[in-house]
Image 1 (tube, rainbow, N blue to C red):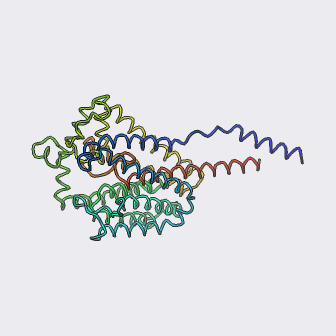
Image 2: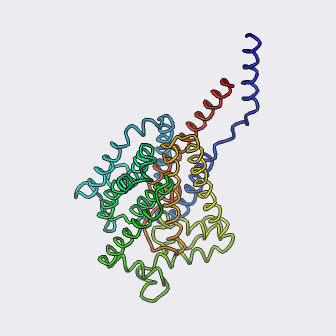
Image 3: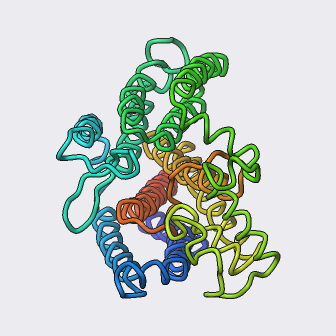
Length: 399
């Protein structure tokens, strides 16, 4: 018996010795790279406007640095929270998101900018409820799919429930209006249902109904139609100094940058030609100062981040840890959706829409939530690895 026990111990030791050494976390490295690039390029894009508006060329850098520190602190807290706790309170988080989305519509609570009531002024920074709502609804959907993994595939009732929950939030977002967040939220929900194995024809049917609804909304809103027509031909006389102005100036920035850019700080478009250069159109400034190469680096980093999210989700799903899997998928889809829309707007593939680029654009709510989502991915990967190690250890002892 002693010899047998010693043999088992040697076998276990050999298994751990044969295991590959753990490398640096890819999600952490990519998030840190994007955050660093964001601080640098946001500063470059905002120096002139900050100097003229506040007398301090580094005004936005100082504020964004504070937001980054808050985001890192929030990330550290997030890393310490087990996934089971997020799952336990998923329904309460959805209710909280509804309350915040309703509160932002109440005069005196919600802060309106350019005709959109999307923020709640907290004094030191503006809270954007849509950023929280997207994350909380992903948590709820992941929990729901964990509980109803097979039922979502088999019947309409369980298929429609997560769509209904997201639909209520989408209706509230339309009231702000925040069409970018609305599209990302609904697209993420549809994709999660598809990844859960829901029948494709059901998804396509609901998507068709949603497209008809969005079209009806667009027809009733002249400014939405104007954005669609202007992005099709931003150089037309009636558009170039109107609704197509931002896109035209962004395209000029990309054109000036060519392959390798004009150099850090040498952008001309940020000198009051391109509005919101440090927020929604920071990618255009990257294109102007670092060219196609700089844009390719940023896009590649987002591709790696989304790819890692799906790899983490697939590993969790293979262990039948469905909440972790769909949580990771959802986070990857949120990053992908927001990056795709912002990049599409910057290069003229999509109508102009006020939507930040994660980690890069100026804005406290967006930056903090981007840090938190990256931390959640790291936590999911940690728990998935720990479960895999525990399963492997169990199988070794059973051997």
